[in-house]
Length: 431
Image (cartoon, rainbow, N blue to C red; front, side, top):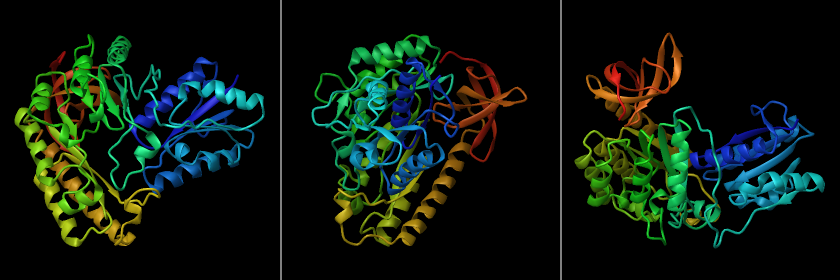
């Protein structure tokens, strides 16, 4: 009996890809075991968005080779796409696969083992098609992630992703409908639609992102649809009105921001201004007043002055985010920003990161406190003992109440414990 253990670094797209490869191994007769336990094969899906991602990825490969000297290691993902040749020379690595040919992972590894060699299967991304992968299980029994888009062509000055993920490509609409129907039939009540640059879905075809969202939303058995990260420029009156017309759409929108300073945004090659970004926020709130807006912010981008950082702090407060994810700027070889002058010292980046995190924590606590006294629809996911369970509202507030995993209930929010809302179920609700 052959065993395999998998480990994912990075984003939800990577998590989806890992699960698809892991299931390919299981269909071939491998038995999945927890990562770190003794296994014949270790699958490591890497990230290269930041230097920390690189370090963690390589450290994990080295650690598995050291702890399990007889194992075979498969390295996939963004760092593998970028540094395939170097990774192929690492101890115990038998297959490097990048971000294509993942459906072939089992046959490629078994060929490498049969030939007692290492295969570098990293494929060129120019002209690549959307690679359909099969996933039948997800992060819980209630919510499933569905990757409908791959690649990016924005070339933000700090970002290596267009280089390692390749051009924009999209899941065909018929496949979107088929996968959402399969997930609903399997019992998943919420579908999270994701991609590397989700707003680019349908580029070069007659389809648009809103068409894909509507197709999933209208699938029989789907109770809630949640969108992954969006670029603010996609938000116009037509888009917001169409979203608001879908009762099963989660009212949480992650609008990628990165900075609230016009000067920094221009140096980042972001294709909007603070004014345009704020207009997108207000458009969504006009159509869906109860929606939660979340975002990402980079601290310490090259040349960021104290005044520009202050602009970002003020803008974050102005936008009234429900949650922010903060990252210190990380230099990436091969990007425009890597060669920019006035790189911000690490201690300054750290200080600014902490200030933004503190502000984000305050805003999240404020947003959750607004829920007290309201009735929210909660999809419960995890048992927490004593007949209680936790789940999430459409705006992605975590709620604890007397319920069972899989129940979709109306809950009156009676209090909070930090960012956890406490509630009392009222009645089961289909939508």
